[in-house]
Image 1 (cartoon, each protein chain N blue to C red):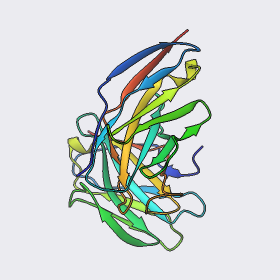
Image 2 (cartoon, each protein chain N blue to C red):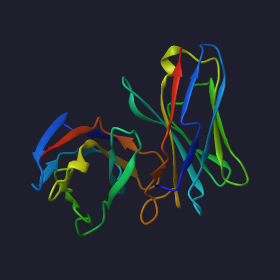
Image 3 (cartoon, each protein chain N blue to C red):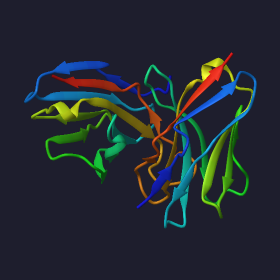
Length: 116
Length: 114
């Protein structure tokens, strides 16, 4: 158990819908990262927050947004869902967001999203 | 941009033997980190081991060791005394020291045979 929690574990929804994925980082971790894992794209970085502020953006679609709240939990919002958004969405956390000690990212169990 | 190459889509090993999973990387950053993660069939991503580019010694964590050859830009994972529970997908990843994102390779599916 990494200490990172994600809910829900599975989500099945229809095209055009909107969903919210939730993540709670490990106790003491200030950085939260979101990744998408799909068969055709592999593991892709989406976005990172550090202590409530957006720190880095990756291949995140405009239909997707995220935020980190004062209690450090984070939510990833996916809207106008398409079939191609079906994937495993991971949240990860780390103590630091720079290199060296503490930069390793611990992943949650993931949310498997299926868009039908 | 950073790139990770894992050339072995699948590997097989006998229980109790050692196995090496290959990883080469490409980065222009002078300072970076290298990571290995394990993904069992259940789907979770498990952090295994980390190596900093300026670390003098190869990292070890229990049965896992990282064979870091900076000049060759390789960071191979060695698993000693393989166990049936080691059967999983293994991902190599890199991160620039000043950055945030992990860049992953395509993974190697390891199967441990009894």
